[in-house]
Length: 91
Image (cartoon, rainbow, N blue to C red; front, side, top):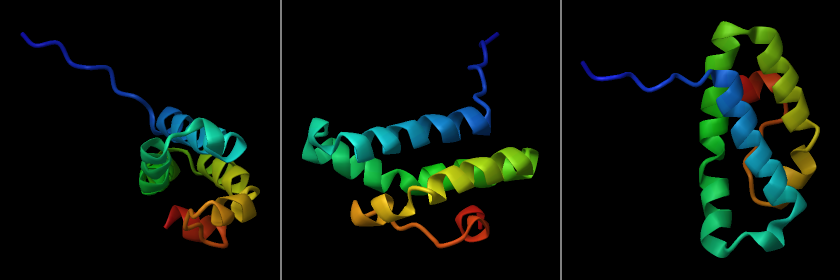
């Protein structure tokens, strides 16, 4: 019988992706161009994890969305497409 891989909770996935984005914002020079592009391209996955989390734990999703929106100006300056509200971020 095949063993199932452990399922990672949406909160953990969202936090992990957010940590990578923050690391990129704080130290963009430590990312080669391909890695930087990967972080940008995977931002929609962070939003998908947030939506999944919202279905399970709306309060946790809103807290993380607010944390992300607090960095909106830096995210926009780095090329991320970030909506203006938590509701739009979670949509």
